[in-house]
Amino acid sequence: MTLPQGLHHIEINVQNLDKTKAFYEWLLPELGFSLFQEWEKGFSYKMESLYLVFVQTENSYNDIPFHRKRPGLNHLAFWAKSRAQIEHLRVQLKKKNISFLYEDKFPFAGGENHYALFFEDPDRLKIEIVAPR
Image (cartoon, rainbow, N blue to C red; front, side, top):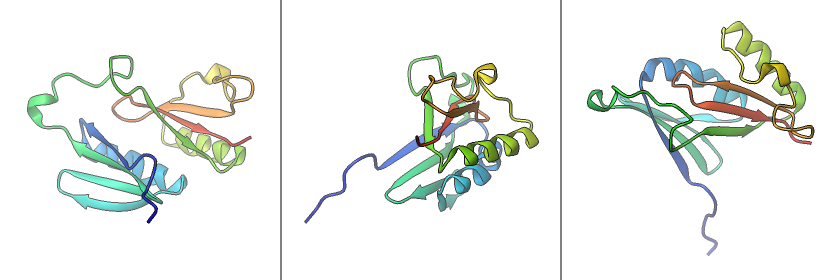
């Protein structure tokens, strides 16, 4: 019997579940994820054996907002299918008035051989979309 390997899931607490859902419900399917679970205080998206879970933070813990430069999670990086998909996502993000990080260095903010797009989700978690070489 072969046991599964790799990352099983990531769970992220969010300040506003509705805003987070509106942000990810179009982005994650673009990247190959499908809605996996929904419940009153959360939702998840899955691709193969990995799933991402987003849960509403309890009110008593919601007074200190997340910042990616504090200890803890800095960003999530996703594979794009191609550079063309990154360009497509860039157009969609502009239409949604989502600003980019490192726009002056696009698409090589991660280095000369790293074609990627960077932006933040509603909780200011950095999202990176990377094109294969």
